[in-house]
Length: 166
Image 1 (cartoon, rainbow, N blue to C red):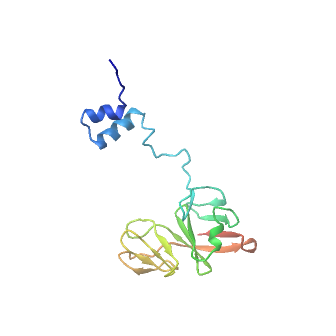
Image 2 (cartoon, one colour):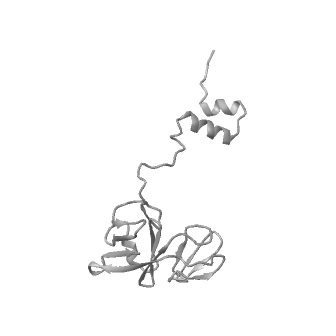
Image 3 (cartoon, rainbow, N blue to C red):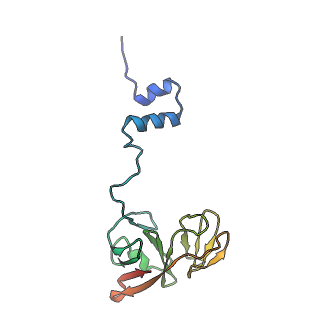
């Protein structure tokens, strides 16, 4: 007589458990490590527009009393030298807005969604409910009614570093 072993998932499916119940069982059965999203590093990390998280290329304080410098020669941030590109560092969005660097709070003042820079219209858009913000942080289209926090930008080292400060 030939026997075959069932995987845990196959066994539970035969019991008639839903996929949600299967996932819960799987997470509990693996000590919650498979479904955990916690990190050993609680400090904010820069995020480029492409979604890469890294601490490389940033020095200084990226939360609280904002005062940091981005190395624009670092591969994580070199694209910021190109008009229309943007990146996130901590809770700040930094954009090369038609040759001028702009740094604003990345959190929409309406419901806290992360905003994006739109180079074609040279503004910032909240993809959640359509709020729009000018490069000076002011609201140009509701439902947001409060402006975004604005940070000072300064090019240093012959244009190879960008300082962001509250």
